[in-house]
Length: 99
Image (cartoon, rainbow, N blue to C red; front, side, top):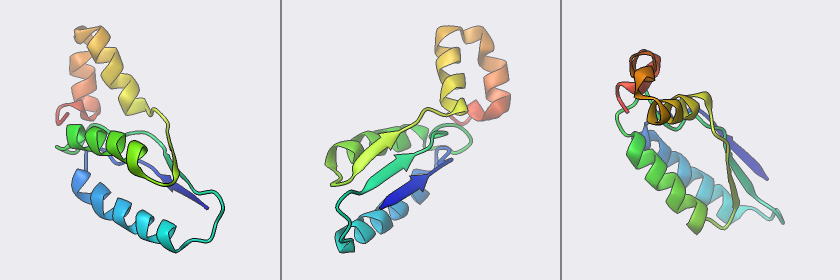
């Protein structure tokens, strides 16, 4: 069984019920292997980017499934800003202002 989750964009309020649904499905599954793939874009646009990152880090440690995390283009922009703050205005226009 594979779950693919993309474009959370700082919305911990929506991530939490989704995780509960995934965990409920996992609990009822007879599959021998379960994978949850998070497809990046965890940050920006929504106001809860830190909570999203914290929750995903916790989820990766506590789920019975194999959790995999892919870095998206919004994470790339965040890393670029951390390395070179001069990229800040462009990142803010791309959704980083909320982060």
